[in-house]
Image (cartoon, rainbow, N blue to C red; front, side, top):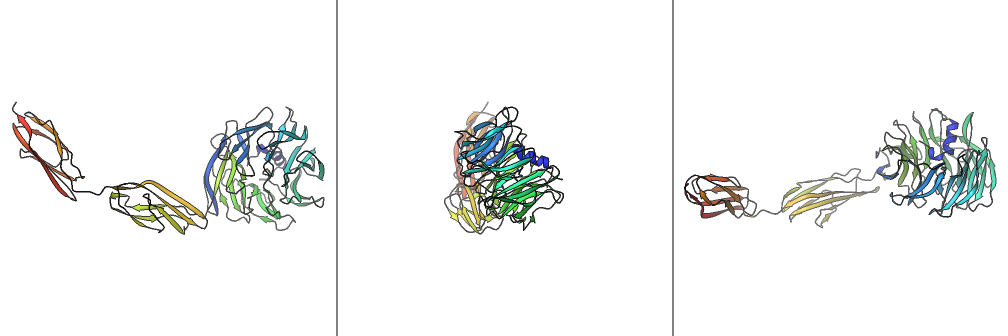
Length: 517
């Protein structure tokens, strides 16, 4: 599928409309862990952006009079707070986390400005004047948080500017820019894109030290929305990641900033887009429709170990790394409405704890053999048997001496990490059997013939067999039998009970009295 430059342009302008997953992992060094819904609303939540400390997430909610409303929420889903109404996408934190920048609609005809506020939502300040019929304000913070680079232009012709975050020293630093931009980690260069309706989108490098620029390659870059992270730049600033349809489908590439070392990372019939480096520069997250839907994938920076992180019939969009590289935030229409989700990433080589035991129930003392069934080659084991005792043996044998229910856990480790499995009340230990002591009752104990009597065993010591003698020459081996006396008289009743530890008999002389009708 060819990339339409017009659509690329629109996706940059309307950042909150970028449309590019359920907890599925494939083989590799990373895999999906816990999926958490952070924010969801029938009015639609989209475009998450992490704070530099990883504790909060900015996102767009629904629509106001002229545009979406800007909210933030803690990464655990608590503390949702509205920050501004009628924003125009393009929101982010300053690299030091003290400010939030955002577009602000100012009227119904589409005028908007670039504004700043404190991270808590106070002290809103207009940085650039409201404009209408202007192609765009596309911007990117410098790493120092002291200034911002932005693009402004009319009729497809834009220029690159920089301005201090206090609004001073606003001046032009480059020309012929009308797409996404990204400041390098050392703030010496700015990556710029330029498009034309008739030609492929181009990527340029603007050198700030030399006040000059040069063509790098054809392709598109993901907007630099998380200012604390280079995203499309590698952390060392030596190469960039981008996507291009030069071979028919949209594929992902890296290239050094001097134009050498161009490497194609994906090559299939799918459209692979919106790649960004992980904070440590070792991974690249991207979107792909390889499985039929827009899903989130991750791979090494050399294109190896591709892992599908999400799979769902819904569209998953806008993946963003957390600062520690352990989670990815995205938005998805799963569940019927757009919502914000975070996906915890786990090392695919980390062991997964599992175990079995035999037997899991019996009388004390109960000897149990535990079997490690963990996967991915653990090298260390720690068992907790639930009675305060532990073991570091892989497959221990343990004896429970007291009756009770015991919760067992196993923690396994290898170089990639740890995993714990706990089974509640896994082992049931019954009290050790003792010689039974016979006891019983009966009701009624007297009456006229025929007299039906219900006998009830009340023996202790857990007998396993019973033998009743009703005194009239009849017997029963039921635990609590009913017996009918048909003749008058006094009857002596006895009960003998047994278990593996022995037997005991109780006899009650003249216990039942039966009279004639």
